[in-house]
Length: 123
Image (cartoon, rainbow, N blue to C red; front, side, top):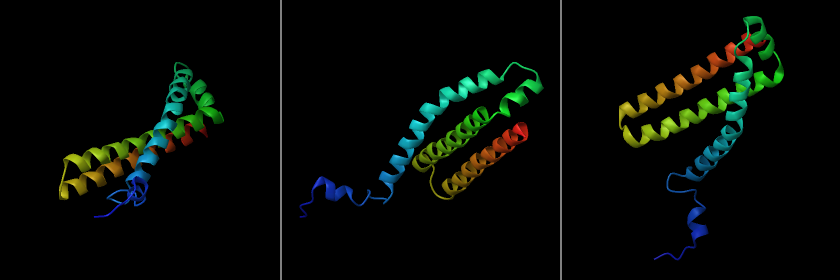
């Protein structure tokens, strides 16, 4: 029988070795999205409704382009991690691995396409 304090049990970061780290990363991403989501909505609303030249001029400014890029990156990485959690819970075997690869590829492709569109729009 081992007499360990709660702190001593938690030092190993859980049974998988990375549970605490993943939890903190998710909490940081969630806090960032809490700040970025209203900024994203405000920025998108201000950029909509104009002619193409007005939209290009608006997104050529640094603040709207940075807000859109950060919201895109953080939001899609959060989506990937949340989908990964659901897949790990409900899909098993080879299908789990293939689905994880597909979700990761889809999210990173969407990030790349979104950033490419923003750069093309801003320059």
